[in-house]
Image (cartoon, one colour):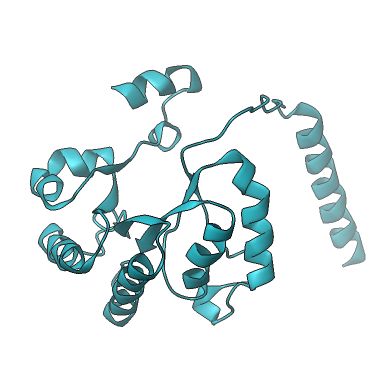
Length: 206
């Protein structure tokens, strides 16, 4: 038994060593300036909303302090489970916030997310828009008419513009969804479509 374990360990070490020697390394370019916005989720370390373990305020504050020099705003993907503390902290660092309301098949949680997103937009002046759902149609968690009803409901109560986040083909396939939102929040992800790096910019523009 010991010999089997030793062989497995040896093979694993050899594989890791080969990978380390042959992998292609690329240095990140210098960045001098600010992005318009950056996606942010506070669930690092042991924080996990599905397990009831919410992020700590000090961790969120440290995150936002670190990224504030590089972006003018952040986009959130949910509005409960501890994420509701983010807009207030972001305001301390001069960051604009796009609040997200996570939608899936859990109707009770959807309701909590919707109410929290609206409340955050009303309470914090640095919240500039709400994105209701994230690839909800792409994942087939909701149908387009269902999502449109939720968007319309949020628009009636929100003090800021409202949209939903979907991949480009969903927007193209559902012009009725386009008509329901205040602006189009389109996800363009050439990598996941198998587009080579040297063609990704052309694909995004197209």
